[in-house]
Every structure is written in structure tokens, then in C-alpha cells.
Image (tube, rainbow, N blue to C red; front, side, top):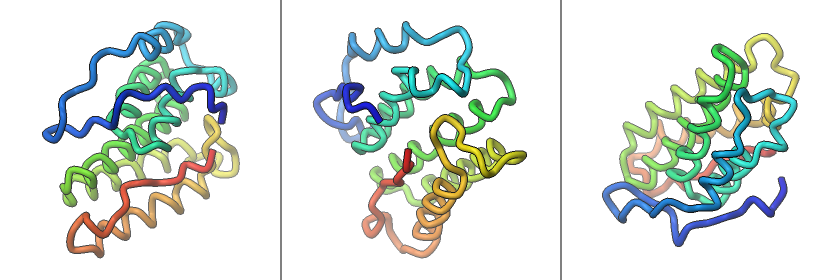
Length: 165
């Protein structure tokens, strides 16, 4: 991934724990550059998608969700990209719920993410969608979900999934 996309606010926003960050002009510029419709082959040139990945990798889950949602809106209905983005948004939300110590909510979101991501790869599990490998993301997500099911609290769970892009 291109490290030039890493534009970070002061720290990750966690609802109920700190205030929502102010609008970031650089992020807004990335969102304004989104094409009318996202095409899978152009994922590496979509600054907002890259920014979401950078946010996610750095543990800025709320921020990743916000940016990816704008990308998701631009995906064709019922497309692999739309399902993948919706799944990634739910993964980010699940990680955020872990940070907020809401285990049940995190588990539900992780399960929803798993279903959406599987839908993205339903007909072609051997291809990458927007840089994401089905085998890798489902292994990460299944491990994360298993931890949520087994651990008594979220304190034992590090809220991070490696997207392996």
C-alpha cells in the first residue's frame, strides 16, 4: 500500500470516550475525488479506499468506517466491491466495539462482516477483490470471531485484523 495516504487526525475517535474529530480538509478532498462509480480494477487509485486501509491498519476504526462508507456508496449495487466494502465497514465497526468493550455488539458485527465478505467472493473465491484475498480475510475474521466467542471480556482481544493487502 502507498504510505502517502496516511493522513491521521490527532488520535482515533471512540464514541462515548472522546469527541468526534473535526472535518479534515485533506480527507474531504479525497472524498470529493471519488469517481461516479467504483470499478474494481481501479481500487489502488482510489485515494479514499487507500485512506480507509491506512486508518484501519493504524487502529482508527471509526475513521476507516467513515471513509469506506463514502466509497461503498459509489459501488455498483450487488457488486463484489459493494459487498466487500460493506463487510470491511462492519469489520471496522466490530473492532471499534471491542475497543468500546461491547463484546456482544462486536461479535454480531463480526458475524455480519463474515457473511458479507463471503458474498463478495461467492462465485470466485480465488480472485482478489480490491486487493483483498478471500482466504486471508476469512482466516483473519474467523480467528477474530472465535476469540470473541471464547473470551469472557474484550480486554483479552486486540481489536485488529490484518487485511493483508
